[in-house]
Image 1 (cartoon, helix red, strand yellow):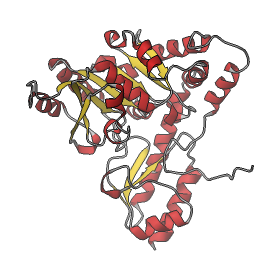
Image 2 (image 1 turned 90 degrees about the vertical axis):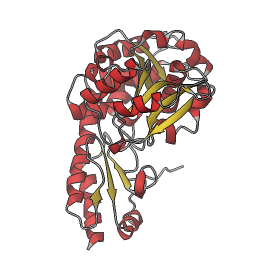
Image 3 (image 1 turned 60 degrees about the vertical axis):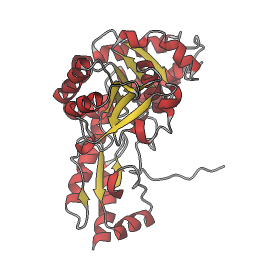
Length: 348
């Protein structure tokens, strides 16, 4: 069977392949036999490197995908009669097919409004104090997304304000970090300043969207929440028997900083794309471009024409039917220029 080659696209960073650092590490891990279920040297080294990134002795557990990472984080934080506050566009609320409630056995999500994909400390307090009687689910946690589903980034002080509000209300703070690397690259700060120093209890550390084949890391800065988590992971079908193949790609991207280099490159390509769209009649960016995605309104004829020329992008993953143009670790300047050239021609 011959598999047709396709061009690089702007539909999703999930469409991109495996970066060379992750691929090489998997090949190394494949060279010999190794103990199973995480008792191997690759998993131990990946855990050490994650702790090095965050400069603390956190608990690290690898799972297959982001849905499991986010949902098991909720299950670790909440009892079945409790709820989680999140933004209305959070992946947790819109794209997990009810998995948080499935894994957490009844835990519910409360969607909050917020400009540019963010929620504020005042929103947390208002929602938590709105109702505390036995007839309502008790609010127990807050989940934020970094970078957000709309491509914006929480600054360290914004996360710290959320962490402070959460602690004052006896809530846990979770971060969906599917694109955490892009946020760190955008902000240029030490990861710890966005994590435990700011009051985050649990991070779903994303690798798949940044050059890994699969595998996310659940990082617990609150040790109590990690208590017996290995049993929860096993019960949910997320304990890989050949764990080294989830862990080795992390070693590949973390040991010499490729995770940040790739994220910074994707951000730069999105910046180039955003600048180019500004000069095209009818195209308009909707939100600040702070990470590796541009949301833009495109005239219907332009959207149809771009798709007719073979370009793929989503218009149903954000508000207002905007085109989501996602750059990846392997997006090139030539890819961006080709898309902009076609868009400009279709605007004439």
